[in-house]
Image (cartoon, rainbow, N blue to C red; front, side, top):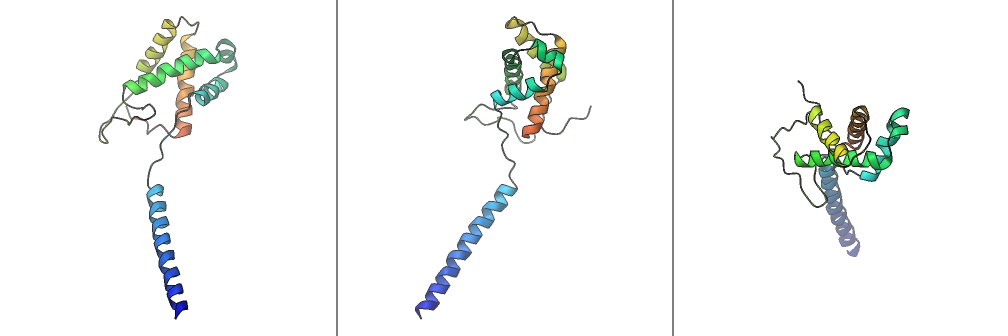
Length: 145
């Protein structure tokens, strides 16, 4: 008689555990993971991915300055959030970031910091940033013109 209660109890515990694990696995499988931006990793990845000529001209600090300006621009557009913040966009709200505007923001930061950076280098850093954001899963589909 004791064996029957033990077997039934074990089956009930197993069913509860299997149901919980299954529901959590389903939820996690259908939830988009958050893309975590690591500035140090981005600086290293972008700087190391530049052409040799640009690598010879730019320092890591200059790349960092440009990346901070670009990410600040995305934050001002509502497309990124600081730690502890939530992105403030509605699900049906479309936001487009124009290349010229992003380059202008980065070049403004370069001028403010009095860095000796060419326009081509700034564009290459932004292109590298987009590659890094794509790599970490932070970019959505490209908008059609």
